[in-house]
Length: 190
Image (cartoon, rainbow, N blue to C red; front, side, top):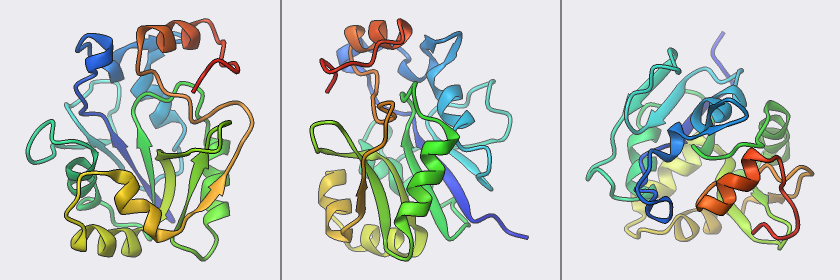
């Protein structure tokens, strides 16, 4: 029986606001951020990682975007080429509070539409925490020439889903990382 969904984790950014550190490899709660994200998709048929190979992800299928460091749209193109399931969870590699329950809720919320995306406490869509119908995402990507995930994904009219626990919180800055390590997602977060 084939899987209902695959997971595509984008892990190839420059982490410029973290001084160029290996952001997916930074540890929160004793494990690399990317391993926490991978743990949130245990039911994914394929675990596709766009970025450098990682020893802690033995089931990972590693690919690189073209050009390397080209941003999330080229990264999505590279990752989506490896997706074989009808649905794909599209995730950033730096989401320390994301759980399997959150991903399941996204897949359920997508229903029969094109997809679902998490919405933060300020009402903003978090484009790197979503679940998408693979065929519709591939079709949109084939005709899209821009560089913005918002520009690509917003026209698909995804269901916006707000969940408790701030699963959309990512670690872009040293302060974000400090708060995540202290388990402090609070109202000061984006």
